[in-house]
Length: 101
Figure 1 (cartoon, rainbow, N blue to C red):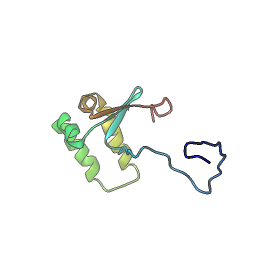
Figure 2: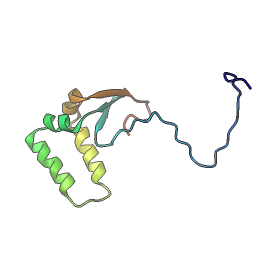
Figure 3: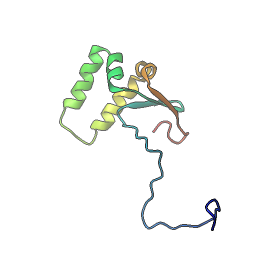
Figure 4: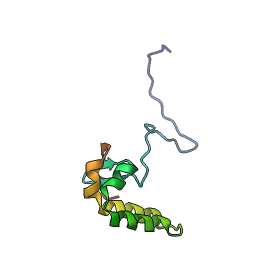
């Protein structure tokens, strides 16, 4: 077989295979609006919030850890997305199945 020769193969894996681009999106550093993911830096996000919003976020993350804490933080940012979207450092299109997730 030559270096640039290609062949079609059917492969059955024994374990899950991750195929990715090496980029991670922390679930507390983005919001999704329509068909776009808006990623923001924590400092820029905090600067965009009101003092009252920052106090509320601090209350959420200072409470005892529980199964709902991540969802509460995500909901907090989602409800303030109109203030956060202008601070986005990256915009990434998302597929229709991810919208509303």
